[in-house]
View 1 (cartoon, rainbow over the protein chains, first blue to last red):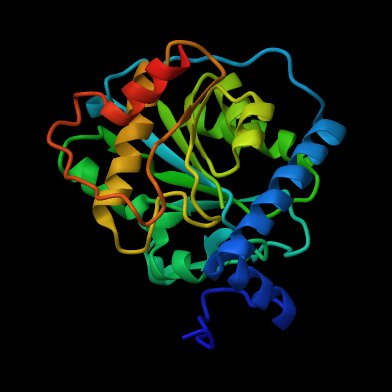
View 2 (cartoon, each protein chain N blue to C red):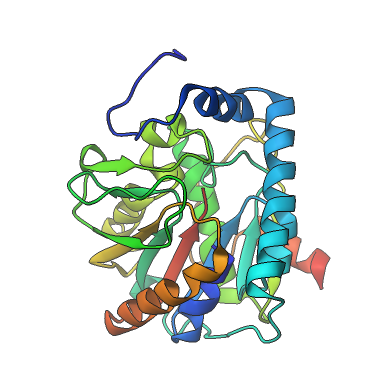
Amino acid sequence: MNKEKDSRVTSSNPFREWALRTSNDKAWGERLARWMGKVGGALQLRWKVGVPKEIPWAPLQQPLAKATVALVTTGGLHCCSDQPFVLKSDASFRAIPRTATAASLCITHEHYDRRDAARDLNLIFPLPRLLELEAEGIVGHVAETHYSFGFTDNPHDLLSPAHEIGILLAQANVDLVLLVPA
Amino acid sequence: VGLLAREIEACGVTTIALALVRELAIAVKAPRMLFLHWPFGHALGEPGNRLQQLTVLHDAFSMAQAAPRPGLVVDLPYQWRRHQYMPIDDWQVLSSAFAEAQARKE
């Protein structure tokens, strides 16, 4: 099982792969990964972005059954036909059409154990679930285009691409964005 | 994802972000965040657990509709692999997990 290889997951070096799997399979590994995520993330946020003062606020203008919903993930997901993310650090984004199938999507990210996400895309990108909810009339529309980021070691680099997708989503008349972390 | 949520919401689009690290969720000051004490790469839960995934979506949509103020971080109560998920009868009704967690905050 541990040896399983998935061509849709960009492989990392063996030591890192072992560490990532340990962070998922062992309780101590999960605690260590969580601590590293907490400390590393908090320091980067403070040093490179600063402490924000105001919080933007745009309340939902539509009932859910009429709203257009889009997804943004930071799970390193991209169409296999697209340029993969740079594993070390990459602040660019990839567009993913609503017609994308699990088989056509790849994961390029080396900071979490991708095995479960590769098995069930919904864990990092619940597009299949959203399409079901759209068919049932619970969600108005699933947007035509969704977005994905990879791993970046400098959160400040994300601000400009994030603003860019904000404009794209607004232009596409998206009402609600669900953001899913890795 | 909190930073992304801030920038997107600043463009006028409502955002709801899931978070797996509570301290970061608080520090980043995103408009609306739902914290799950689950492993990285599993924000929607376990592979193949449809009810669990729908429960998270219901909680997220509930918060998107009903969060009373910016900057709220709501802790969801589900224990990893120890919670029994139920079908959602009515998506129009706000999730009780969100409502209860929010009531604890206020």
